[in-house]
Length: 395
Image 1 (cartoon, one colour):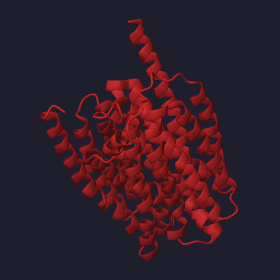
Image 2: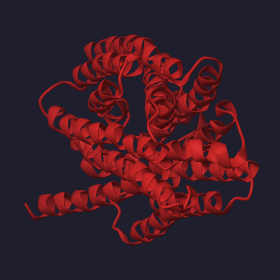
Image 3: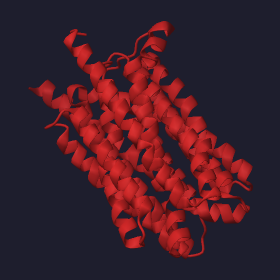
Image 4: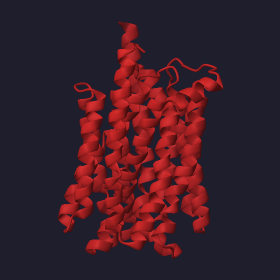
């Protein structure tokens, strides 16, 4: 019994550290969306160009996830977590003081690289600590991401309304990552699963069909998240004439829904199969996203925006948990591969949404990401079929 109690206490420490990480990550990522319009004004750029700051994060994240996940399997979680959080601090601070858009782009690549190293490592760390309850632990930890992303647009809206501009939001995010680096230097880590896996085994794990299906699904989900978190403020301002600071703050409605959705997801994973929870979420998110993008009045758009967040909130943590439950030995590698494929959505969607918004309007850009969730449902069904065959074969 004492050992069990010690394990439970250890798990709570790791989950608490995960909550702190995702709060900081939510702020660090969340300040970008509501900052796009004032950044566009400051640098005199079209939507398609300013949206490249989101692409920059995706470029760095893709590289970081591919490297960070496997390295954490081979060399342990601690040094990767500390390095990733320090890098996040440096990248956000560089954005806050960048004198040109080109420097903002480079700083966002660095920030994305740090996020990409740290997040798969943390996911594997949660799996190490929680073991068979990893789905619940990942859901709980990621509640804080939505909370941080909820605070970010409110913070940016307040900064804009007070005349301070968009830069201090990134500086505050950097401060959170300083505290986070200290926390991950101090916490105890569970027994490491690190092992010198052959490169061939790492590649086979990372590119398994099951992992590829789930990763592509997450890439489409990220398109939805980027669309509504990154372009809702522009949508409300351009389509309905909502004042800029109010439109930026209104993005918090989406993240409020995400908080509720992840809390609901953490409750559902102990009662329903993970695939069933993910399917219900993906189908519901598609419908609410279409409604939000087609809404004729701002009140309906805001209500639908909230339910897009609720419906989509548990997709990411539950799909990640589905991927990890078959590969606990190479948890870092699987998490890295899934996060790397997820970042493809971060690379592809921002310029496409920006180009569609410039050519047509922002409403059309949001409708595009809503329709992109339809193939995500199909990918999830295919992954479920592969999982059933695997279980029947006793693998």
